[in-house]
Amino acid sequence: MSAKVLTADAAKEAKITLIEGGRGTQAVHDVVVAMRAARRSGSANTKSKADVNLSGAKPWRQKGTGRARAGYKSSPIWRGGGVVFGPKPRDYTKKVSKTVRRLAFQKALTERINAGDVLTIDKFAVTEIKTKGFLTLLKKQTDARKVLLISDSFDDKTYKSARNVKPVLLATASEVNTEQLLAFNKILITQGALEQIAQRMKRE
Image 1 (cartoon, helix red, strand yellow):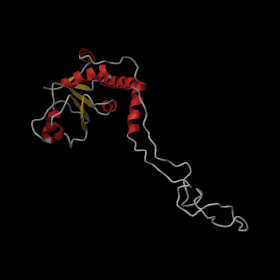
Image 2 (tube, rainbow, N blue to C red; image 1 turned 120 degrees about the vertical axis):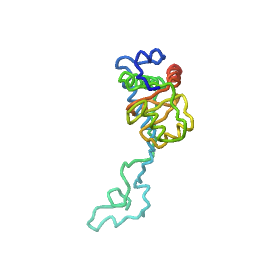
Image 3 (cartoon, rainbow, N blue to C red; image 1 turned 135 degrees about the vertical axis):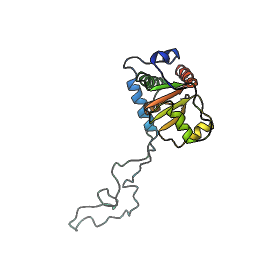
């Protein structure tokens, strides 16, 4: 069966909470920024003048040479010296409340539904482990290049068949997030996943 566009009225019948007006835009921004910041390793590191492994002796005597005074070879103004105010390992994690995360998820899903980018299908599963079979089944539902496929669960055949299809992401209704809802041209949701998303919005 071919996929159908999920309208706002159909979403409300499925008990999907939609956000009306401009509310939630800032929440989407905050959540996406926090998610991307959490993926940063924060491993950038430089040595200060105290960390550089150089001699502590004065490079020349204090007076009589005609040159400026110099106290140590690890001075930041010299080649091989320390770095002034350089980066150190840090944690970029940003805290976002559960209420803001829920609002952002609802807002992102609402915008995609209003834009006609969300399609529904009864179920999505391949009969054998073949990338070609997966693509053939997907093409019957949508011609979009980047597709987010959401289901309540996927069997091993479907997961393995989709491994090499990079523009397509398989996500369960319990783990799909706000950033993923915004990153794809089309969103294909099974009926089972739609029910789980409705329950998830109430629970979070």
